[in-house]
Image 1 (tube, one colour):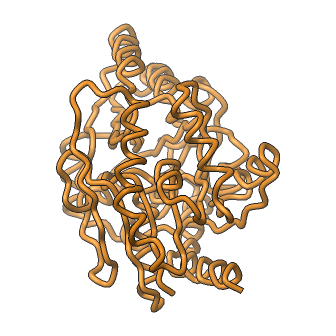
Image 2: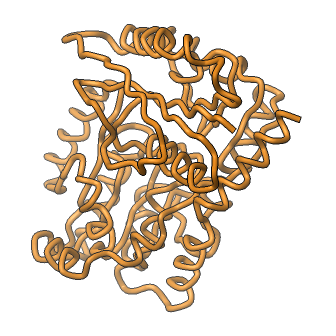
Length: 360
């Protein structure tokens, strides 16, 4: 099949990581795959090298200083649509991976990674169209598929994420030691500082944790986003100053350095308020790092006995204390085995079966 996968960015966000890994696995399975995306801020390629078998179409998308989020989203849709529309008929499958690309693609398959709730009118309208317009839907977990069914009466096919388990399980020992020399004992989270990631709750939990573990550092990596979280970030920084917490904010970490950063952590915190799967947390399990996540149905579904679950800051702090005390071998083994079962090749084969059924 000739397959187009559409994304909205070249930056290392979860949906973009998913798009590239799926594209490579589909190509390895013999499919002809092209990834279309927007090159924001002058980007001419993705945040990491992509297998040569995958064709790339990066559409220039220059920044406009002072542009509001709603206007930037509408411009993103218009620019991607104008570039993709002349080529759309050449593809057997057009598969959008997010709200922006689904609006740009028109008649398409859509993966709904998680369901957002926007108050900005432009975003709310785009979100709604990106759910109701596609003719078929994929979800990466049954919990999100159930949410889609309850809210819109849409029946989605569930195809879980893959994970590059071996890449995180075999992180370079020298690089791991360097992160530990630089950071000491640390709790890691990946995803930046934003409302959906539960960053304020994690900050409060860290302040509680420091009461018994004063030498443990909270390290926050990632943070590339289309949206403007400056107000939330300002509240987070003000609260950090009040608490005297002083987390280490790394920002985006080069892709080649991420496995060693994850593997060097003493615990991984994942307090997201909304998730579809939790790819970064699954990567932590692959690296053998104890995992503490927010107690959400979707995360219960995905992680089961491999994680500790916490409903708020006090429980999160307690879970991190237990994680720092050391995982029992059974939980650590369960985590590694769980991550290893989620292969991208299996995800690709299920996508191929799904595409074939649609064509039939």
